[in-house]
Amino acid sequence: MLNKISLVITGLVFFGLFALTNSINAEEARPMQENVVIEQQVQRLSEELRCLVCQNQTLADSSAPLAEDLRKEVREMATKGMSDKAIIDYLVTRYGDFVRYRPPLNLATALLWIGPFVLLIASAVGFVSMLRRGRKLSAEAPLSQDEARKVAELLKKES
Amino acid sequence: MKRFLLPLAIFLVVVGFLFKGLNLDPREVPSPLVGKPAPQFSLPQLGDAQKTFSPRDMLGQVWLFNVWASWCVACREEHPILVALSKQNIVPVYGMDYKDTREDAEQWLSQGGNPYLVTAVDADGRVGIDYGVYGVPETYVIDKAGVIAYKQIGPITEDALRDKILPLVKRLQAQ
View (tube, rainbow over the protein chains, first blue to last red):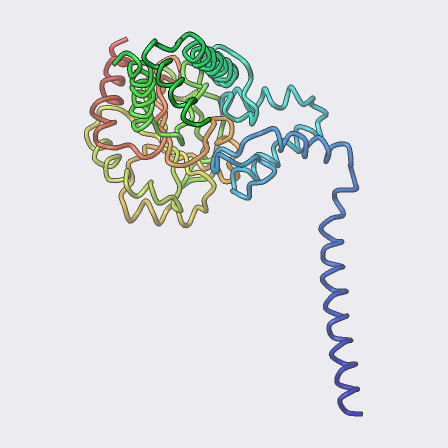
């Protein structure tokens, strides 16, 4: 009997804790719904922009203080109704193209963009020419008289 | 013999790139602000919040603008170099205290010495964003026309000061 009561009490305590954390979560999530369009824009941009402190993360992924500041800045610009392009340009004039997670195609980044394709084509050409050479070697090496005689002898032995 | 030439050439090219890479710092992001006018601002001064500091006050002079913070570990490394530089009276050094509290900043300056003629207080890091600050310390060399001539990312070392910053300052001052 006593056991049952303590079980119920424990259950109630856990339920209470669960409800409490749930309500805390709900509290934090609320601003998302106030302006869905702006939040979506901020989210979209944070995934396009690089955190300059931890360079392999986007602004959306990073919890560095600068990333927080920049997210705040982006949100304020979005609230002012600035377009994606205007906001990205604002940050590029301050931090350079590096702040964009997807580098733009220009003279400095041309090698980055076309390099893999050049490598792919070069290795494909190399591979094909290697295959061709191999085939040529096997096709163009007729047996010498000596070799032909040996083959004939071996075949004779077999039968 | 000839069949080894191509792999050897590729190997040497790769080695060349890797060797170059050894001397590059991936954390160093080239600033698009070099060659552009220093962004304007007006910030309260450390020590006297009633007074403000603005880069406009500095037109006609070559000056160093050092972004620092009391919580910044690398700043500790460059601080003695800045203090020594300020005593030589070659170039005025102005500071910006980035995302810091006044108490901490003042305590830091009273302990390590104050190389700055004036320190502007950028408590929320807004001006830092305008200057493309992404890690303190960062130092800008600004010319007489208010244009950023050079940006040092990370602490100023003796080498950087002697080989890059001071020659540049002398050249700009002669202009």
